[in-house]
Length: 324
Image (cartoon, rainbow, N blue to C red; front, top):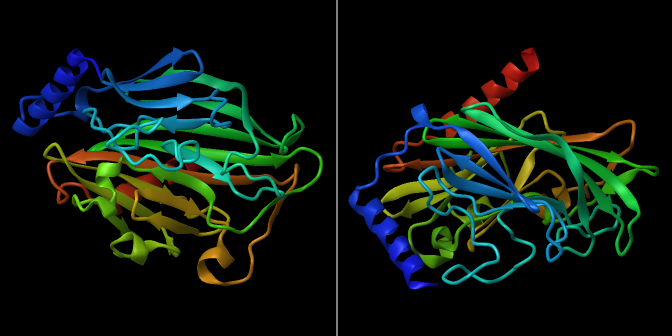
């Protein structure tokens, strides 16, 4: 890193620790969207808080990366990963992603088959304290340009207490033949946390779920309403809470790992609970809809931010949307 970059990074860290930077305030912050070649950068009050990458040959699917807290502290692992972050699963664990290890026998999770963004259905648009966009994706068959399924993905941001929320809604349809979602751990909405928040680092990172289970081993394979990964960095309590819509077709099991991975997976009944194997058939006429939300939070302490309150706010937002 150039000397100027090192100095700037150290200055930011010192300012955060000593409290020289003004506290982030939702009352004066707006979302904006900076459209760049192959990606969209989301800014909150001028701070780049997330990047949506829709054309990356090395990964082969759209994804979110460089997700940060409202004041700019990294929440997801750097992409491509750089030390001191862990360097494993480079293409698979980009930050935030939705993918499937078994969709009609094709493996999109491990990047063996491609997901191609076709176009924006709704261009990135800011409405002050809210904003978002939607895209059309094609799931291509392995080693082919033939389309297996389509996905309409909608991403909507809004400000919430102690941070901001991304609501992620996807609708999947078959093209000709029915598609089948299989049963394994690597299915659904994935998050790879910045490595300094990973439990195995021993720096105070914590995983907590909606039934008050603490730790990756306790959370792994359990059905959850939400799961949170958080800890203290630069004197601030920061983290990500991943929440599932109770109206999804199935509860989501949590695939949590101590190296900073959280996956909300509604397809893994056998993989997680040793129950009957999941086999969800989706046709063109009867699409599958999945709805999740992620809260990216920052506060003075873990006592300031309450995950159950964030989940209730999400449920209230769902009810308001249904009334419209």
